[in-house]
Image 1 (cartoon, rainbow, N blue to C red):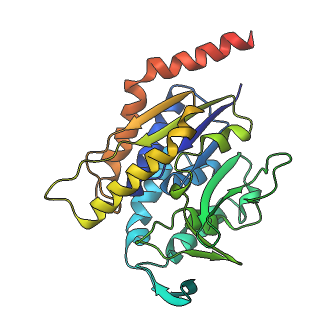
Image 2: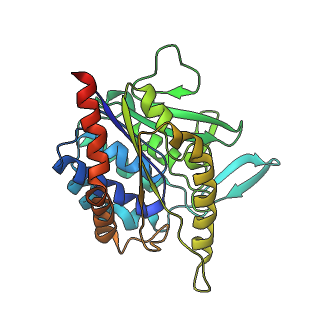
Length: 284
């Protein structure tokens, strides 16, 4: 019996996913397949590379401000009515950081990772979903990409609209995968997972103190949750995490957010355990 986990996007809130993984490890739940979108791809990739949840927290604490800080602006030609458009950040630092982190494990391309991994993104030029993965499902070759550097794949899935420019790969212009597949349950199941745990965030409320980024985040949460409804029906358990208005680019509460993910598992452990026990009976 193989357990898979699908991690949603959510900006810096994504570090809560590492807390979820930490709690599952302590409960002796082994994850066999992992997938993630946007921030979820950042955590999923590090875990698939072999970093422990606590090491992932340490890496976020070390690099988060570089990832969310001002990057080098650059122009992407020919995307909007033939005119050049400039985004807030180019995402190059994120790509370079992940390439460096992967290299520490002796890995360069995503197809060199051993643990089954799926990372959705969307090409805004043809409005289609693509999936970066190290194991292309049998008979399904279209829209799957396995020959790509780790950093580029994570950058593509994490190119959040209005924050990062599109990530260009050959003829593609990739943006945040949350636009089409915010919780990649189906893709995780295609990798052979018998049971899939979906992890997502509840949308924060908006009030008079909310910033423009808060409003954008709320909008993306609403769209992401609507889009994810069908995906979530294919999961065996949905774990919702409340992060108390931690902003998209908030790097000051990483440790407390990690604890939110950890506590979410512990608070719902009986239901999660019930799934694993049912699986054990089915195998007998």
